[in-house]
Image (cartoon, rainbow, N blue to C red; front, side, top):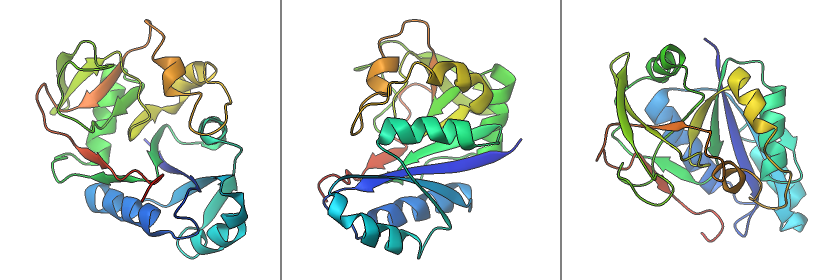
Length: 210
């Protein structure tokens, strides 16, 4: 199974500084091992930082693709990739030190149980907000919970299965057009890493403000 890493960034208030996306990438590598990412850049809202931000990103990453928005970038990432599975990672996250499986093990569980969306939770795995219900499962020695939540939080998708889902995404400005669209559906089921009450596995750095 081939796994690709897609990272999504924009010209936020901190651009053209790359500290946040560097920290996110290093945290990913520390947790799962090194993967060479494709970086998708939305030059909004501070478009005057675009050229300098691109120049600084190229000091770290080899492949950068310009998009109109997060949803545009997300759709392009699904279309462009040739991998079986894609790790979808926005630029302002840190992984906590409690993910106890390699990426291949997690993807094997997804393949065995036909999961098309598995995310890492920014809070304890409890019934809350859009996680309106949770069903504990275990596969390939990986504990996870089924949930109706299809959040943009760091997640892995089965790309071929997701091709039929991503057509629901709307190309909207900013960070809109993905999760708020998918969360309205009652026929989509995602998964979160860990069993019920498992502590948060990621921390949001909130690159809009830092």
